[in-house]
Length: 445
Length: 189
Image 1 (cartoon, rainbow over the protein chains, first blue to last red):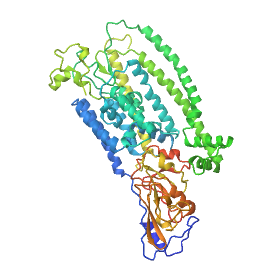
Image 2 (cartoon, rainbow over the protein chains, first blue to last red):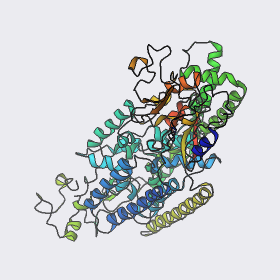
Image 3 (cartoon, each protein chain N blue to C red):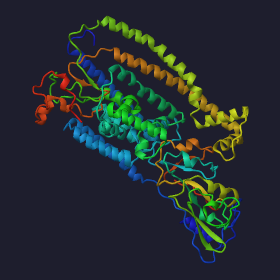
Image 4 (cartoon, rainbow over the protein chains, first blue to last red):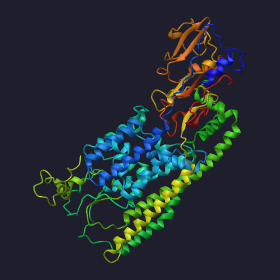
């Protein structure tokens, strides 16, 4: 080691000691060798590329399993692998969900270089979703896998609640991007409920949150994926434009309704009822135009709310928080015991208050603009959801919703045509395949 | 959708979907292009700048790992090998022995070895060290400052956002290139 050689060379000389060297390092008569300060190396770069390679391989395998052998069992095995590798071995970092923030920070902060692996983790699942749907969610994402594997008895979430809560991921995505872009906080990482499990350590509140999600996940399929995951929101959009889609039946839908309750994640959609009188186009057009008129109102309302929340949101940035703390302390001085973090931060603030306050002002302005945008985004998302709900969709078959389907392959086995394809007997306890909805829902698992 | 001949809505949907996909692929491709120019194979790791560190003790408690990835390290070349080490002993210790009541370290993580009269060597047992910086404070305030805190990369999980950095009163933690992941103190420091 260079340092060691330097020491041996310099040990004979009088040490040109700085102020710190109050006690000159000794000359050992017994020829004692100084130990070397160890520097354990970080993880090898090649291993990071291995992560990206494993991601691409599992992504390809999951897609193949969904489309070719249509194998739920294969996906379950792959889920276990993904959970073990990306979850417990890689400790949930790097993950595609959090990568959104690195991308946002990288776009706005030129000094931040995005690691190539993070770029791959962000892009690859989206590109795959643009062609095949959310196969990433099916068996590659460790957060999805852990929820998928704890599912015991899925209860049906009412469709209105499903749609209502389904807005949250988009809002979370907006907040995550905005706060990462302003350099304030990585919210998505901070509130990830499963990473503390992967690391087997974390704060009590986060572990409790994770446990709550897992317990809820036993009865509500994938609660985080459906109602919170911000990356899932992006994949949902991508899956809407997907070239190919996951279908329940390998052949033709016979409308037997056996798959009606087969989806534990609320993605199955029924065919449009034919008997009911449909609304006339005029009524629909009127509703749509009302909604579009509402657009500026919602966006402006959201933006205003964002503006109101901006001062609080800016506090998430450490610099702004310190500046606030400094100013508050100037106004009403409080005494903190020496050497506490509070006292030490005040000391730093008092050392150069002008620079601190100036940079806090800049960050605050940026945060205000960001909050305007975030508020507008909230309004836009809500409106688009309303529009999407009011647009008439005609379905002739039972089919999974393109965006909501996570391609878990659970519904396949409920389809009599699939059973014929696999050479299986009809579902046990079901003498004659026919429109018997009550007996459905036992497939999968 | 409304009032079109049968078959037509379907193909229009397909057209729209295809268009959206094309748009999305172009967008993602463009984004990838922009990002690729800024991306780098050189990833970063979090590290403490010992020159900025104020030894507040947050490192021991704020890390996401239950035993913090921050440990005390020793720049032996800077050490005075003092018998009365102010990083090892409590102020005004009862006796200069390894008895627990004399030690600053709450976890007995510093091993004190006799080398030759009057020199003692102090080494850190990283299994025991919790990164509380009590010894660092003692050594920096009254000694040579050869003890200092570093993030150990065999333990650090390299979070997207370092939880200690967020709480550091001195703003001493920042990203460093993976090629130089430590900021060690040296003699001239």
